[in-house]
Image (cartoon, rainbow, N blue to C red; front, side):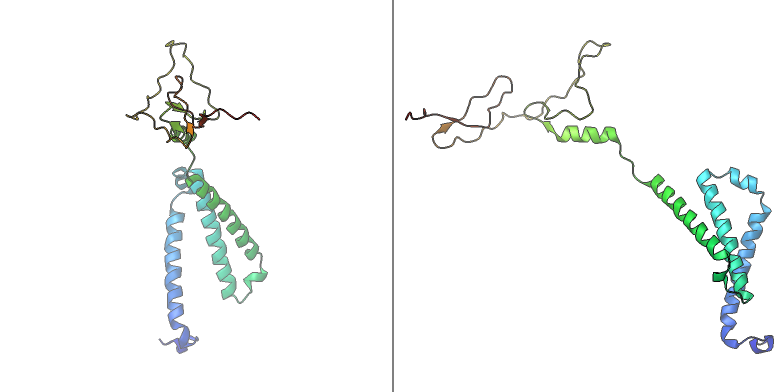
Length: 193
């Protein structure tokens, strides 16, 4: 039969065919969900997935009711279904935020502290420049009687000293650190006035 014999314009024939196939798909999905006991379905899901399933079901039913109102010639924007759909969208946004937070990268504080400690390691002094905040200095443990081992510097050569400036000489290396201070000392005595 033609569209005009059915009582509707021929221009919307393609849209109606698409609508009918969509309704068939929705019907088959709903039959699948209804055929399975809800408790069995929910027991297989974690709480976040259960919330997603409940939200999807509520949003789908309210959307179908919206379409029903449109087919009856009523304005769904003036009906309570509009507020319900907005409420469900708000809850869906909150669930999405929770899911995103769950997937977000977490800071491994121990790894960050090790990274900073090694980044601040002074190879010439053989120790860290500054202690790591929140960490106590290494002391002998009661079980072993000695301090935990620290890695020795792996330089393989003597520390470099800067070239002397005109008229000034550098201090000699100190026995405690094994390197010369960076401040030059004057070689001449100051003049008296």
